Amino acid sequence: MNKAFLFLFLFLSTWVSAQVYSLTDLLKMADTANLTLKNARLDVTSNINQRKAFLASQYPKITANGDYRYNAIIPGQIIPADFFGGPPGTFAEVQFGVPINLSNTVQLTQFIFNPQLNYGLNALAINAQIVAVQEKMAFQEVHYQVSNTFFALQAINQQLAYLQKNEKNMNELIRNMELMQQQGLIIPTEVDKLKINRNSITNGLIKLENTRLQLNQLLSILVGFPEGITLTIASDEIISNPTVTEQTNTLRPELELIQLQKQMNVEERKGTYMAYLPTLSFYGAYNYNYNMKPEDDFRTGIPSAFLGLRLDWTLFDGFEKKNKLKVNAYNKEKIQNQELLATQQLNLASANAKREAELQTANLEMNKEQLRLSERVYDAAKAQFKAGTISTNELLQADNGLQQAQSSLVGAYLSLRQAELSYLKSISQLK
Image (cartoon, rainbow, N blue to C red; front, side, top):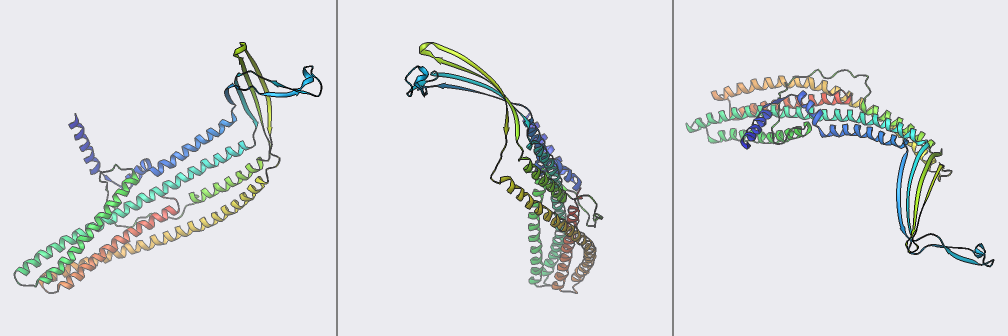
């Protein structure tokens, strides 16, 4: 039975690792498994329950309490002696009560008028919209992180492919040069020059492989991929994407959030004014008091019940509400400034990202042409080197030019993708 489970686990692990994930697949995985998005959705659900909890204050409250008391010393009180027929002007000490007292009370309380209730409900309604907007912002941020990591991995994979090809070519040249050295046609230092270049390529491969592993682990965390299983992603072509579009009229979440903060500021001000009004509540209680004096075998229960209205009104609060209103006015001005600044920053960010994407689109095409030319130069130099018409230094110069063109192309690709993502995020259009 254990072998069967082991076989099933190995089969599933192989199947999962063999599956190739596109960016769309990864974004869908993140939507369900990313912990940041899970917490954002929990905030939305939590707010719903906060509203339910607040609404519960409208309902009657029933409380019960019980008290058992043993009076080791029965409390006394001084009263005029003539109350018992004693001489006027004198006083006597009288004890009231019995040693053992059991008291049980049930009380019902119901608010009739509470001016803070509407403010609380309105504030929770606005807060529900706030957490919904924050969920949108979290969605945009997570999709940005997943996409950015995906494209960074694409760049690393392409750079690794270039270096692996370069290393293969260099190993082939070294083998040919070593044969020529054995025949006495060249000196050993010429071979060493190529080996130095090959070692530099190998070192670059090691560093890139480590970076690729780190990015792969980060992507796995972002999309909730199981630990210990390699995440294989689909290849993305090194071409420009038509993702940079004109801005939409949709209100950006950042500005939408500020609008809701303005609404909350208005409700806070209303709530402070409502605090000047009294609260009125109805209450009723039933009490049963049982008294015992064991030495006299005295036992008796005394019931009581009452109904009442309670008015609570703060007539002077030390200017607390007055100062709260001043703070509210300052916050209103701050929110207005924040809205203006955020609008300017978002417009600037989107304009800069759009220009950067357009610039990197042209830069990508230029670097693709530069790579084609560098490959032609390197192929010609390689042929000339084999024919013995150019030196090792000239070959290495052509090789370095090819590697630089490869790196520049990969860098232009990544810069373009990042500019596209930044633009789409700035106008809240990341899907």
